[in-house]
Amino acid sequence: MAKKNSLIRPLVSDLHPYVPGEQPKIKGLIKLNTNENPYPPSPKVLAAVRGAVDGRLRLYPNPTAEKLRVRLAKLHGCQPENIIVGNGSDELLALAVRAFVEPVSEGRVPRAPNQNISGIRGTRPSEMVQYFTPSYSLYPVLADIHGAAKNAVPLNPDFSLPGVPELKRGGQWRFDAGLTLVTTPNAPSGHGYQTVELEKLCRAQTGVVVLDEAYVDFAGVNALKLALKFPHVLVARTFSKAYSLCFQRVGYFVGHAELIAALDKIRDSYNVNGLGQIAAEATLADLKFYRANFQKIISTRAWLTRELTLLGFRVLPSQTNFILTKPPLFPAQAWLEQLRDRKILVRWFSAPEVKDYLRITIGTPAAAAALVKAARKILTSA
Ligand SMILES: *Cc1c(COP(=O)(O)O)cnc(C)c1O
Image (tube, rainbow, N blue to C red):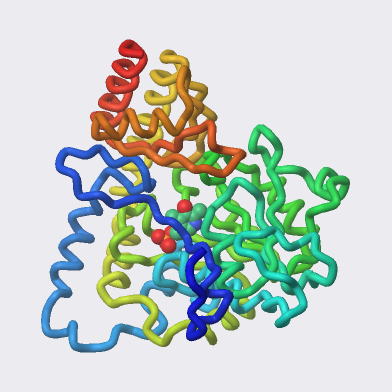
């Protein structure tokens, strides 16, 4: 146990922070661990960013990302009031917890890091951040940071979404939770959800629902219309994954003007950096370039799924730019190490529902071929 430092709030001393995927600087490393896009941004985006690097860097950027919000509103058929831009969608997820969930009042609930405290008597639904497991591993950390209760409810064993009647029967799900976060398509399973099933879930919830569509451009469907239809539903999008802009940190929420205004009140005044705004605007002016990349990634996904299946991997169907796969012969963690030895970095999560799987980002066709070749070598030398 770390020594308690009385200068720091117990909540912070006890916090288990989010663990991002590694960003090692190893020469020749094939990096398939953080779902980054293998293709660089459009040349027009690079030119726009370069063109903005001059004396204007001394100025504050537009505080509300006005031009970007106007462009996004046009793209999604809504008003700029329905859009808030964040320093990545991670920032907006944190703001949603702060805006829509009460911290558990002091001393009422015994705190233990990363404990699911929904079952503890006295937790009020307004104090609850709810999500399915497995899903984005940032959600529990955001709840912990805020001192909110967590309600982590298992997905079906095949990672499909439990229906409303099943959730009612299960008894753990709260239809009155202050905030429900749904990763759709899901990470790390890659499983896609139909908009009709999400709509049924949204209809049944009385608190705020965020549909986190970080990977939606690699899927066949999206649920954006639900954010424009229901006053309590927000859709989260990001420029990071599909639009090759992780480095710039730009994400946004779409939803009812009242929810958006609440988030807007509590964000930092200049939360989105100027170069990020420029890069995102230029991205929206060149969507054709990106749609071609989505197609490349989707066909590499199909190729990799086929090849790994032939080698004895169980590959779950994916609607994202990664696959979740159960490798043959050795435990997944051993595969992680063996692939690392061959300079291929993938992701492994210790959570019980996924510890038998590897999550592999879809890279270029060459990266996918290198992965298959390495897997074949590992199997033959076993
Ligand atoms: C990557 C990711 C995000 C965060 O994206 P940023 O915009 O880079 O902060 C949000 N949700 C999920 C599920 C993600 O995988």
